[in-house]
Length: 85
Image 1 (cartoon, rainbow, N blue to C red):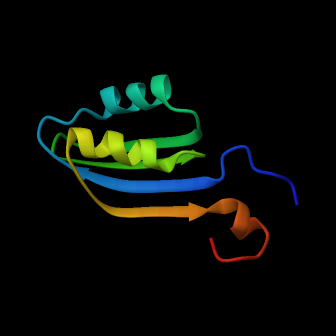
Image 2 (tube, helix red, strand yellow):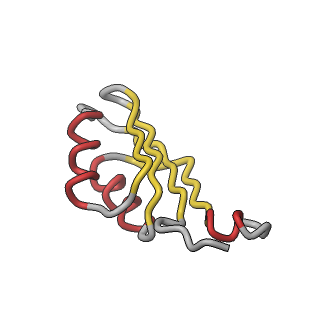
């Protein structure tokens, strides 16, 4: 099997006040390695979807700007090999 460049599909919700999806998007692009970034929501709730090799960094960042929940981290490399991710 081909090795994925970024193997963890990282998803989470961030609840807070004054959240700005454009600022969050730009911060992630500027500070973390990964791809397939999606940041959507409003000033109270943001959903993040990001492929990275360091999902804990995204979780730390999310917690620094609000309260994170519905966290999902899946190992796409294992999934591509037919294993549980």
